[in-house]
Image (tube, rainbow, N blue to C red; front, side, top):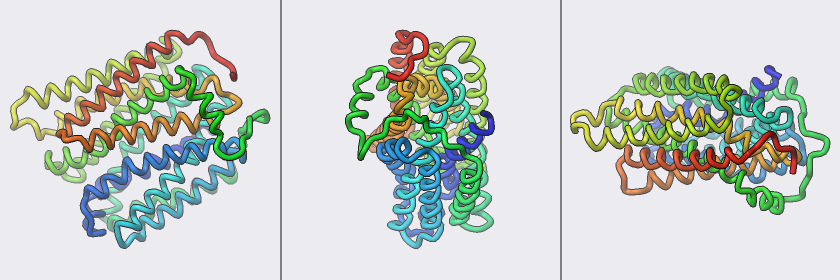
Length: 396
């Protein structure tokens, strides 16, 4: 099972690699494509928005066609998108490349989380989801540094050539080692399963946990999108210093995720959700207090941004595993459809929330604080819902 989970992890990594690897090179990409850096920044939430929307289509396909074929289709799209980005001569081609990559990761993400649901239940599934989401944080820990080194040595296109090679390698691993885990009694549908989506969306339990994940993801997405502006342009950190600060936060989330995996069995999923809500609320209060009460001379210091972020993203680690397992637990016979719908709410909701707060006439720290508060409220509602859940539910 460990080898199977690790193989699923390689598929899940396609999404964060597509975001974090090129973060330190945003100004260089903007210069190389002769476009404002704000255009390049919008490709981050756009990437996740496309990923979320695409899962509504990928979910039925993974139940109808199987996990492995859709994984290979996603890897092929990722390969094409990476090549388009690496060879982009202007903003339209780069934007198209990011849309193609977003379509690709919606397929691989649904395959990965459906695979966990195919084989695991209850707290074991929560631990697997927590492992996948926790291990993901090695990417924001290392990818910005790797992307920065590649760009410094070979130019801003190099990170996208790296993604091309990664997609080829994972494609070979999937062909030879990924088993087909779709249950024999999986319900198949023709076209978009609107009826099934409606049935799942009619369950308050599903909505509570899916939106908790959306709030947590939106908070992290807002932090990631604003970090280059706050830390590099206002805080005057170099690309290497930015990578170190960003990477340290990624390692921190990974350590907290390991702790959460050990705590789930001892204290239960509801307690983890409660801690997640409190951590995000505390991060919001720290961020707003620092911006409102400390001297102006301190406002550009990196710690006033990164310390509240460290507290809030710990809440993400406590939220995602329990919330995902609670949301998908009742849908064993429709794991692909349910995973897709949960992914859509998480990705599109988080990306939409992040885009909304960034469009508001707010300072960067105020926008992030607002998103942290939203994540805390949504996770708190999920905690209240979890107290009403008893035992492990089977398929409805």
